[in-house]
Length: 242
Ligand SMILES: *Cc1c(COP(=O)(O)O)cnc(C)c1O
Image (cartoon, rainbow, N blue to C red; front, side, top):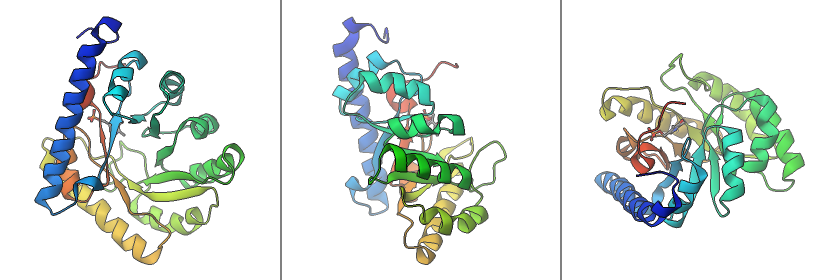
């Protein structure tokens, strides 16, 4: 498919409807296996590297919650795609935090107390009276290749972060280790859910959201309690390296 060619827009629309339905059906089936209600899981379609003109068809096909991992790329797309709820799923440099607060509806990748404090201050300036929903990224399997709080450090940081007036801590997020099989990701997903349960028993201000699972393992994540899955390739096809 010639991505981005306007002539292909109807074909893209049909293909996106199909891909969207297929992912929703797989989420529902995974939920059913463990007795969860189908509406429990939010699908974030991770659209990094997908050009804005192709995304128009995706939005028309009902994929209205998009995830991006770069501020500038999201800014360019947001100007062309009204009506989208934008999630930041990638690392945020402090010098781009203000622009991120202006663009994103949810920041899933809060990986330090410093970043939380900065986002709180900026949200107070950019969107006073409307706390910014965030997730705290936890490196549950202590993978050195990934950002995020360790389970111990998130517990230590939570009281201060929950007290920040301009943030709403909706829950926790994790990025699974690159694994040979979906099952290999299960222990990390289960660990995130159990960490969330322990923390929420102590800190009721922490929200119940659990963002975990991507194309290769989102069904396992749903079985383990994911309330948000972040799916790119199963919807948009494989990405070219950039
Ligand atoms: C790219 C990305 C995804 C989506 O990955 P796929 O394997 O394409 O589904 C999810 N979460 C994060 C943080 C990402 O960077």
